[in-house]
Image 1 (tube, rainbow, N blue to C red):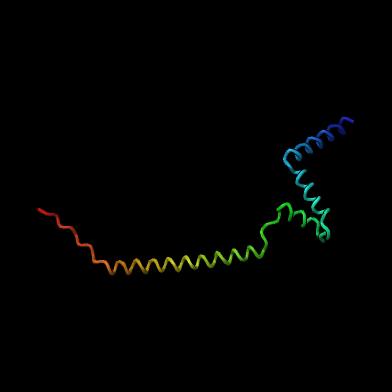
Image 2: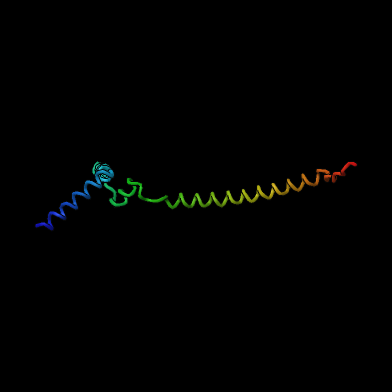
Length: 104
């Protein structure tokens, strides 16, 4: 009987922990949304994950971001080359600096 009370006490402690952390409230809200859904989804677990924001980014989003990174890296390289060319042109157009001759 004492083991039953200890287990019951642990459950109650855990329930209080979940309630304090807001887990119970959040789960209840998501389950209510699922309950009120006119057409139930085929995969309830995916529905819960989506509404709890557990899922990561969509594969299409990841691919689009990878493509954008690649394009931006190419643009960066292009701009660096252009910058180097312009620096070279500036050096060619500027007269060479004459060494200063100390006056006596």
